[in-house]
Amino acid sequence: MFGGIGSIIQAAATVLGVLIGAGWTIYLFMHRRGEFPRANITHKIIDRRIEDDKIFLRVDVSIANVGDVLLQIEHGIVRVNQILPVPEDLLEAINASGGTDDFNDSETKWPNLVACEQDWIIEMFEIEPTETDEVNYDFVVPFGVKTVEVYTYFRNVKKRPREIGWGHTSIHEIAD
Image: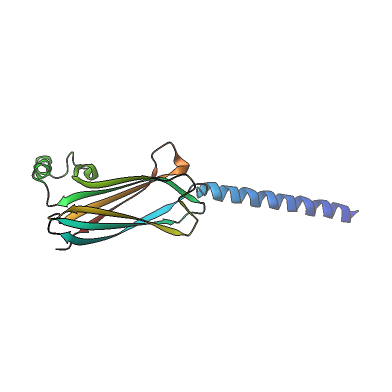
């Protein structure tokens, strides 16, 4: 008589344990937003003078998938902006604003030297969890530029159609 009741209690406890475990797993997955990719972006920038009036600029962009799901990229942007020497009109705007007012969106204020937008076919640029990939860009900028700001952005396919993704900005001082 007790053997039958014990089996029923044991089966119910097993089912309850499985349900609690599944619920906890789903909670952790949603809490950590495990369905969305996560990325870390870094830059390695190299410059070389190639002529009296030109500088070769190599931008190596490293994209690390630090999430638990596949990271797919379909669109990327690279912009190289001049910081030094500061153009006269921009210097006047900085001085007129006191250096802070109306000048907070600085990435759009610095003069753009070169830019590149790149599109990939879906499923052609994928990075597995814990893996890293690299995208390389070559640019030529005028000699005399001393410091550049390099901005990169890669769109998150999982957040389409919104323009949400991963961006990174680096400041690079060009060697004399």
